Image 1: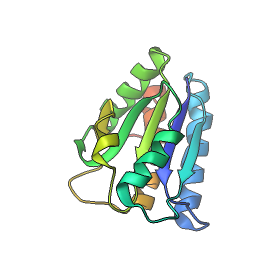
Image 2: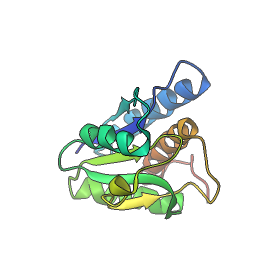
Image 3: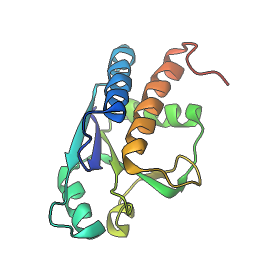
Image 4: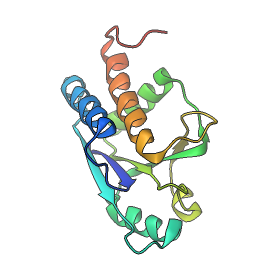
Length: 155
């Protein structure tokens, strides 16, 4: 199994980058004993300003072949953290590679969004795409703690 995050834009040094690195490091340490590999971050950048369609092309090329695509989109399901953890475990048990896709400031092009096996949202509000990386990294770590039965997650 492989887990990737394909995201539009480069995360520069700063608090968001530090938080993503910290949560993904925690995920790697906790996930190892659960059969979950470290997460790989793949960043793409549309330097020509082609909009969502161009970003979709870059993201599509970044998604590893055969991966289950999970799109982060405001129109997606709003799973609880335990539900999210259960889905991650189910993909692991099926030995399926995962690729979480985070679009740019305008979101994910409908052509790519329609390819997703699962679309998830972090609420009805719209979040800055760089902050969504932090939120996803934290939820991935939280999923490992739920699966491991540690007290990090409290209901």
